Figure 1 (tube, rainbow, N blue to C red):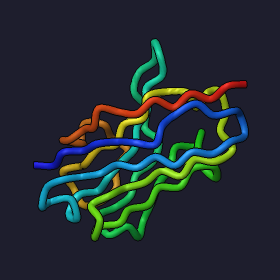
Figure 2 (figure 1 turned 180 degrees about the vertical axis):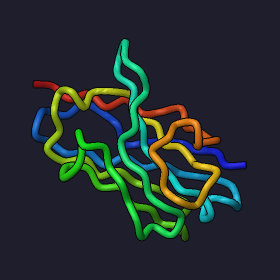
Figure 3 (figure 1 turned 30 degrees about the vertical axis):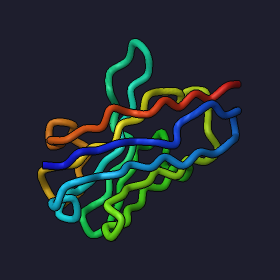
Figure 4 (figure 1 turned 45 degrees about the vertical axis):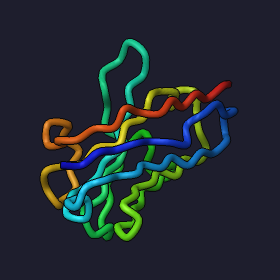
Length: 124
């Protein structure tokens, strides 16, 4: 079992940067692909980025490609999301999640464990 706690959210102006962190507990963390998802008010949860278990391969939603970077440190049981050139449309609650597979995936149903989320608000 994996427990996840996100941090690093906040209020930032458009064009600014934030770095989200996700602390994981559980011995299986290093075997799980990890992902970041977000949910804006009145919208469905959407995929943002994913990274495979060894951190060598990543995949991004088109809306964040070139602006966001996902990374992980298995020694620290942590995954990160560096966000740059933020836009008002990036405003959402950001969740990290652990997949049941070691290979990266954008499919929500393939993630077994979810954090409570951290709020990111980007002002115009």
